[in-house]
Length: 94
Image 1: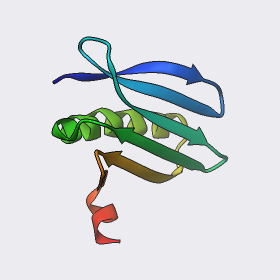
Image 2: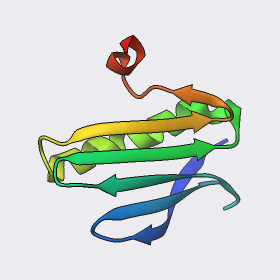
Image 3: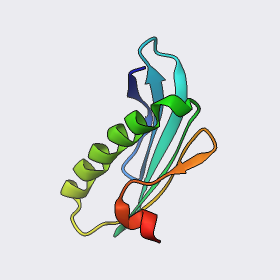
């Protein structure tokens, strides 16, 4: 199943994006909250079978945001089904 971002609310301080499938059915959401030097990412996806797709969708989005504001500390909490997913190997070691 292909998944995509569909913007719900975008402001200079936060973004809320729906995660939709190819039929435009919402299957989850993700929120990006901005602070001076911090980026908080919270997201949940209902479908466990697309966990890697979710990670592959979120990771480059975050990398793009860090290009606009270098030096951001990134804090993430992402779940697929009831399982937490890690964006990087560093997260797995903590």
